[in-house]
Length: 296
Image 1 (cartoon, rainbow, N blue to C red):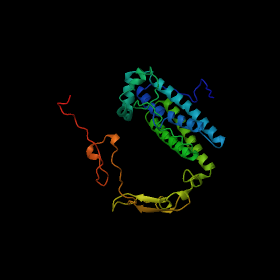
Image 2 (cartoon, rainbow, N blue to C red):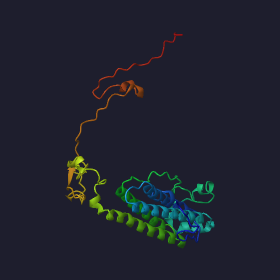
Image 3 (cartoon, rainbow, N blue to C red):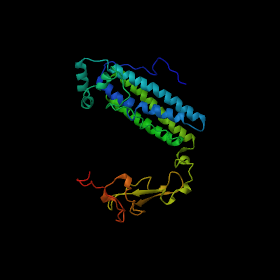
Image 4 (cartoon, rainbow, N blue to C red):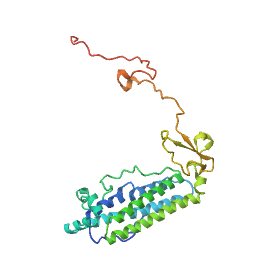
Protein backbone atom coordinates (compact mmCIF):
# COMPACT_ATOMS: atom_id res chain seq x y z
CA UNK A 1 0.00 0.00 0.00
CA UNK A 2 1.21 3.49 -0.78
CA UNK A 3 0.51 6.75 1.02
CA UNK A 4 1.26 10.31 0.04
CA UNK A 5 1.71 13.71 1.58
CA UNK A 6 0.44 16.85 -0.11
CA UNK A 7 3.80 18.58 0.44
CA UNK A 8 6.95 18.22 -1.66
CA UNK A 9 9.93 16.31 -0.28
CA UNK A 10 12.06 19.45 -0.78
CA UNK A 11 11.17 23.04 -1.76
CA UNK A 12 10.91 23.80 -5.48
CA UNK A 13 11.01 27.45 -6.45
CA UNK A 14 11.66 29.27 -9.72
CA UNK A 15 12.69 32.89 -9.68
CA UNK A 16 12.87 33.41 -13.45
CA UNK A 17 10.75 30.98 -15.49
CA UNK A 18 12.66 29.50 -18.42
CA UNK A 19 10.75 27.26 -20.86
CA UNK A 20 14.02 26.08 -22.37
CA UNK A 21 15.27 24.82 -19.03
CA UNK A 22 11.92 23.09 -18.54
CA UNK A 23 12.70 21.05 -21.63
CA UNK A 24 16.15 20.15 -20.30
CA UNK A 25 14.59 19.02 -17.01
CA UNK A 26 12.52 16.50 -18.96
CA UNK A 27 15.67 14.39 -19.29
CA UNK A 28 15.79 14.05 -15.51
CA UNK A 29 12.17 12.88 -15.55
CA UNK A 30 11.83 10.53 -18.51
CA UNK A 31 15.33 10.10 -19.88
CA UNK A 32 17.36 6.93 -19.55
CA UNK A 33 19.18 8.60 -16.63
CA UNK A 34 15.96 9.94 -15.13
CA UNK A 35 13.81 9.45 -12.08
CA UNK A 36 11.04 7.41 -13.74
CA UNK A 37 13.68 4.84 -14.65
CA UNK A 38 15.11 4.44 -11.14
CA UNK A 39 11.67 4.59 -9.54
CA UNK A 40 10.34 1.69 -11.62
CA UNK A 41 13.63 -0.19 -11.39
CA UNK A 42 13.67 -0.20 -7.59
CA UNK A 43 9.95 -0.91 -7.28
CA UNK A 44 10.03 -3.87 -9.67
CA UNK A 45 13.13 -5.23 -7.99
CA UNK A 46 11.23 -4.99 -4.72
CA UNK A 47 8.04 -6.54 -6.09
CA UNK A 48 9.99 -9.60 -7.19
CA UNK A 49 12.52 -9.75 -4.35
CA UNK A 50 13.16 -13.15 -2.77
CA UNK A 51 15.39 -13.82 0.19
CA UNK A 52 16.01 -11.57 3.22
CA UNK A 53 13.05 -9.22 3.59
CA UNK A 54 15.18 -6.21 4.53
CA UNK A 55 16.50 -5.91 0.97
CA UNK A 56 12.98 -5.94 -0.44
CA UNK A 57 12.00 -3.24 2.04
CA UNK A 58 15.10 -1.16 1.25
CA UNK A 59 14.22 -1.22 -2.44
CA UNK A 60 10.60 -0.35 -1.71
CA UNK A 61 11.59 2.62 0.47
CA UNK A 62 13.90 4.07 -2.16
CA UNK A 63 11.61 3.37 -5.10
CA UNK A 64 8.85 5.24 -3.29
CA UNK A 65 11.20 8.15 -2.53
CA UNK A 66 11.94 8.40 -6.24
CA UNK A 67 8.24 9.14 -6.87
CA UNK A 68 8.84 12.25 -4.77
CA UNK A 69 11.70 13.25 -7.05
CA UNK A 70 9.50 12.85 -10.14
CA UNK A 71 6.97 15.13 -8.45
CA UNK A 72 9.64 17.73 -7.64
CA UNK A 73 10.93 17.78 -11.20
CA UNK A 74 7.42 17.87 -12.69
CA UNK A 75 6.67 20.86 -10.45
CA UNK A 76 9.89 22.52 -11.59
CA UNK A 77 8.92 22.01 -15.24
CA UNK A 78 5.46 23.51 -14.67
CA UNK A 79 6.88 26.52 -12.85
CA UNK A 80 9.41 27.13 -15.62
CA UNK A 81 6.62 26.95 -18.21
CA UNK A 82 4.53 29.61 -16.53
CA UNK A 83 6.23 32.13 -18.78
CA UNK A 84 8.82 34.87 -18.75
CA UNK A 85 9.14 38.07 -20.78
CA UNK A 86 10.91 37.52 -24.09
CA UNK A 87 13.60 39.97 -23.06
CA UNK A 88 14.44 37.88 -19.99
CA UNK A 89 14.55 34.69 -22.05
CA UNK A 90 16.88 36.31 -24.58
CA UNK A 91 19.09 37.59 -21.78
CA UNK A 92 19.26 34.12 -20.24
CA UNK A 93 20.32 32.61 -23.55
CA UNK A 94 22.94 35.31 -24.07
CA UNK A 95 24.31 34.72 -20.57
CA UNK A 96 24.51 30.95 -21.05
CA UNK A 97 25.68 30.09 -24.58
CA UNK A 98 25.27 26.36 -23.93
CA UNK A 99 21.55 26.82 -23.32
CA UNK A 100 21.26 29.08 -26.35
CA UNK A 101 22.99 26.52 -28.55
CA UNK A 102 21.15 23.45 -27.30
CA UNK A 103 17.66 24.85 -26.93
CA UNK A 104 15.53 26.50 -29.53
CA UNK A 105 12.59 26.70 -27.16
CA UNK A 106 10.27 24.59 -25.06
CA UNK A 107 8.95 21.21 -26.15
CA UNK A 108 5.71 22.11 -27.96
CA UNK A 109 4.00 19.04 -26.49
CA UNK A 110 4.40 20.53 -23.04
CA UNK A 111 1.74 22.98 -24.20
CA UNK A 112 -0.10 20.99 -26.85
CA UNK A 113 -0.47 17.74 -24.89
CA UNK A 114 0.01 18.70 -21.26
CA UNK A 115 -1.28 22.27 -20.92
CA UNK A 116 2.05 23.75 -19.76
CA UNK A 117 3.09 20.79 -17.63
CA UNK A 118 5.69 18.05 -17.53
CA UNK A 119 5.55 14.93 -19.69
CA UNK A 120 6.72 11.34 -19.04
CA UNK A 121 9.36 11.80 -21.74
CA UNK A 122 12.95 12.85 -22.24
CA UNK A 123 14.39 16.17 -23.43
CA UNK A 124 13.76 15.22 -27.06
CA UNK A 125 10.11 14.40 -26.37
CA UNK A 126 10.63 10.63 -26.62
CA UNK A 127 8.20 8.89 -24.22
CA UNK A 128 9.70 6.76 -21.46
CA UNK A 129 9.38 3.10 -22.47
CA UNK A 130 10.96 1.17 -19.55
CA UNK A 131 13.60 -0.44 -21.79
CA UNK A 132 16.27 0.50 -19.24
CA UNK A 133 14.46 -0.86 -16.18
CA UNK A 134 16.52 -3.77 -14.87
CA UNK A 135 15.08 -6.19 -12.34
CA UNK A 136 16.85 -9.52 -12.81
CA UNK A 137 15.94 -11.26 -9.57
CA UNK A 138 19.66 -11.53 -8.74
CA UNK A 139 20.28 -9.18 -5.82
CA UNK A 140 23.91 -8.35 -6.53
CA UNK A 141 23.39 -7.95 -10.27
CA UNK A 142 20.57 -5.53 -9.50
CA UNK A 143 22.68 -3.61 -6.97
CA UNK A 144 25.38 -3.01 -9.57
CA UNK A 145 22.71 -1.88 -12.04
CA UNK A 146 21.37 0.47 -9.37
CA UNK A 147 24.78 2.00 -8.72
CA UNK A 148 25.13 2.67 -12.44
CA UNK A 149 21.66 4.22 -12.58
CA UNK A 150 22.42 6.55 -9.68
CA UNK A 151 25.84 7.43 -11.08
CA UNK A 152 24.49 8.43 -14.49
CA UNK A 153 21.60 10.26 -12.83
CA UNK A 154 24.05 12.23 -10.69
CA UNK A 155 26.12 13.10 -13.76
CA UNK A 156 22.96 14.42 -15.43
CA UNK A 157 21.97 16.48 -12.40
CA UNK A 158 25.46 18.00 -12.24
CA UNK A 159 25.22 18.96 -15.91
CA UNK A 160 21.78 20.50 -15.39
CA UNK A 161 23.21 22.52 -12.50
CA UNK A 162 25.64 24.09 -14.97
CA UNK A 163 22.79 25.08 -17.31
CA UNK A 164 20.77 27.26 -14.96
CA UNK A 165 21.41 30.42 -12.98
CA UNK A 166 18.09 30.27 -11.16
CA UNK A 167 18.75 30.02 -7.39
CA UNK A 168 15.72 27.80 -6.77
CA UNK A 169 16.64 25.38 -9.52
CA UNK A 170 20.22 25.18 -8.31
CA UNK A 171 19.02 24.46 -4.78
CA UNK A 172 16.66 21.69 -5.94
CA UNK A 173 19.36 20.09 -8.07
CA UNK A 174 21.86 20.17 -5.21
CA UNK A 175 19.33 18.27 -3.10
CA UNK A 176 18.80 15.67 -5.83
CA UNK A 177 22.57 15.32 -6.28
CA UNK A 178 22.91 14.68 -2.55
CA UNK A 179 20.24 11.97 -2.64
CA UNK A 180 22.05 10.34 -5.59
CA UNK A 181 25.17 10.35 -3.42
CA UNK A 182 23.39 8.41 -0.69
CA UNK A 183 21.69 5.99 -3.05
CA UNK A 184 24.97 5.06 -4.71
CA UNK A 185 26.41 4.31 -1.31
CA UNK A 186 23.46 2.28 -0.03
CA UNK A 187 23.51 -0.06 -3.02
CA UNK A 188 27.26 -0.56 -2.63
CA UNK A 189 26.65 -1.12 1.09
CA UNK A 190 24.34 -4.03 0.25
CA UNK A 191 27.12 -5.64 -1.81
CA UNK A 192 29.57 -5.09 1.05
CA UNK A 193 27.12 -6.57 3.56
CA UNK A 194 26.79 -9.65 1.34
CA UNK A 195 30.55 -10.21 1.50
CA UNK A 196 31.93 -7.69 -0.96
CA UNK A 197 32.85 -7.94 -4.61
CA UNK A 198 35.11 -10.99 -4.39
CA UNK A 199 32.58 -13.11 -2.50
CA UNK A 200 29.91 -12.27 -5.05
CA UNK A 201 31.94 -12.76 -8.23
CA UNK A 202 31.24 -14.09 -10.72
CA UNK A 203 27.57 -13.20 -10.72
CA UNK A 204 25.60 -15.39 -10.22
CA UNK A 205 27.85 -17.05 -7.65
CA UNK A 206 25.30 -19.86 -7.32
CA UNK A 207 26.48 -21.36 -10.63
CA UNK A 208 29.20 -24.01 -10.41
CA UNK A 209 32.22 -22.38 -12.07
CA UNK A 210 33.47 -25.87 -12.84
CA UNK A 211 30.79 -25.98 -15.53
CA UNK A 212 32.46 -23.07 -17.35
CA UNK A 213 35.19 -23.45 -19.94
CA UNK A 214 37.69 -22.40 -17.28
CA UNK A 215 40.53 -22.09 -19.79
CA UNK A 216 39.09 -18.74 -20.91
CA UNK A 217 37.47 -17.52 -17.69
CA UNK A 218 40.35 -15.16 -16.87
CA UNK A 219 41.56 -14.25 -20.36
CA UNK A 220 41.51 -10.72 -21.71
CA UNK A 221 40.97 -11.26 -25.44
CA UNK A 222 42.85 -8.75 -27.57
CA UNK A 223 41.18 -8.29 -30.95
CA UNK A 224 43.61 -5.74 -32.37
CA UNK A 225 45.60 -6.49 -35.51
CA UNK A 226 49.30 -7.23 -35.21
CA UNK A 227 51.10 -4.08 -34.22
CA UNK A 228 48.10 -2.57 -32.43
CA UNK A 229 49.05 -2.02 -28.78
CA UNK A 230 47.26 -4.24 -26.27
CA UNK A 231 45.51 -2.22 -23.53
CA UNK A 232 47.15 -3.49 -20.36
CA UNK A 233 46.10 -2.86 -16.78
CA UNK A 234 44.66 -4.59 -13.73
CA UNK A 235 42.57 -6.75 -16.06
CA UNK A 236 45.50 -8.20 -18.01
CA UNK A 237 47.76 -9.68 -15.31
CA UNK A 238 47.72 -10.64 -11.65
CA UNK A 239 45.12 -12.43 -9.56
CA UNK A 240 41.58 -12.40 -10.94
CA UNK A 241 39.08 -10.36 -8.90
CA UNK A 242 37.08 -13.45 -7.99
CA UNK A 243 40.22 -15.04 -6.53
CA UNK A 244 39.86 -18.14 -8.67
CA UNK A 245 42.65 -17.63 -11.18
CA UNK A 246 45.16 -15.31 -12.86
CA UNK A 247 44.44 -12.70 -15.49
CA UNK A 248 46.30 -13.12 -18.78
CA UNK A 249 46.20 -11.79 -22.32
CA UNK A 250 45.13 -14.01 -25.21
CA UNK A 251 45.33 -12.82 -28.80
CA UNK A 252 42.03 -13.40 -30.55
CA UNK A 253 42.01 -16.51 -32.71
CA UNK A 254 39.11 -18.65 -33.92
CA UNK A 255 38.40 -21.73 -31.85
CA UNK A 256 35.56 -22.93 -34.07
CA UNK A 257 34.97 -23.63 -37.77
CA UNK A 258 33.02 -21.70 -40.39
CA UNK A 259 29.29 -21.81 -39.61
CA UNK A 260 27.23 -24.10 -41.82
CA UNK A 261 23.48 -23.67 -41.99
CA UNK A 262 20.93 -25.84 -43.71
CA UNK A 263 19.32 -24.59 -46.94
CA UNK A 264 16.27 -22.35 -46.52
CA UNK A 265 13.10 -24.23 -45.73
CA UNK A 266 10.55 -24.06 -48.58
CA UNK A 267 7.93 -22.52 -46.31
CA UNK A 268 10.24 -19.54 -45.78
CA UNK A 269 10.00 -18.56 -49.46
CA UNK A 270 13.61 -17.59 -50.07
CA UNK A 271 14.82 -17.29 -53.66
CA UNK A 272 15.40 -20.44 -55.74
CA UNK A 273 19.04 -19.41 -56.08
CA UNK A 274 19.39 -19.73 -52.29
CA UNK A 275 18.15 -23.32 -52.22
CA UNK A 276 21.58 -24.83 -51.72
CA UNK A 277 23.35 -26.00 -48.63
CA UNK A 278 26.68 -24.67 -47.44
CA UNK A 279 28.38 -27.37 -49.54
CA UNK A 280 26.65 -26.15 -52.72
CA UNK A 281 24.26 -29.11 -52.94
CA UNK A 282 20.90 -28.04 -54.34
CA UNK A 283 17.73 -28.81 -52.46
CA UNK A 284 14.77 -30.12 -54.44
CA UNK A 285 12.46 -27.23 -55.09
CA UNK A 286 9.43 -27.03 -57.34
CA UNK A 287 9.31 -23.75 -59.23
CA UNK A 288 5.83 -22.47 -59.89
CA UNK A 289 5.26 -21.15 -63.38
CA UNK A 290 2.41 -19.21 -64.86
CA UNK A 291 -0.16 -21.26 -66.80
CA UNK A 292 -0.20 -21.13 -70.60
CA UNK A 293 -2.09 -18.11 -71.85
CA UNK A 294 -4.52 -20.28 -73.92
CA UNK A 295 -5.59 -22.33 -70.88
CA UNK A 296 -9.17 -21.74 -69.81
